Length: 158
Image (cartoon, rainbow, N blue to C red; front, side):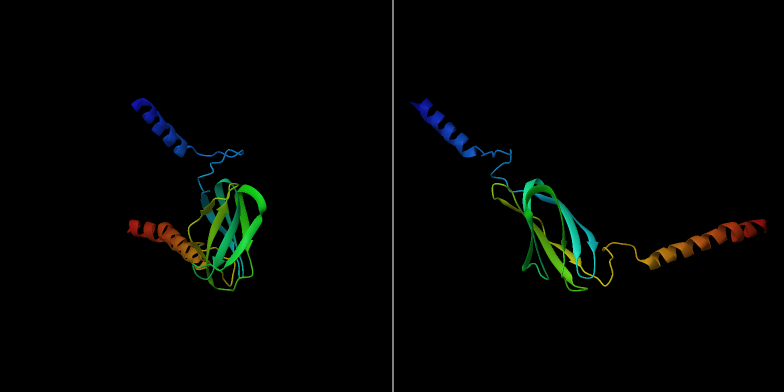
């Protein structure tokens, strides 16, 4: 009598742990994962981003001046794993928050973290090296050259 009860409990547990698999092989209970979010280009009134998802998804970009976002851009109806889009019509020199919302074929939603980008008066991606830095590097190289070629040998001859 104890054996059928134990068997029933094990069978019930196995049924609860069973995961539904769709025709395309995706796990119906696991939301998609958004990764590799990169800002490719920033302009006066736009920015361009790309990202990947671990399963084919359709995506929406939520964006706005705060983490409440407020605006969205939908990316077509095709299910892809690589995504790229431009967010246009933005204000100049303004900081924007954005995140990616990915939906798989089963309707589960996955969210990226919050990212920020600032539109600018010129097309320069944050993290680029300003021109004055390269000028300073060039000047330093010239000073080092003159020291090694002219000043150091003259001191050694004395």
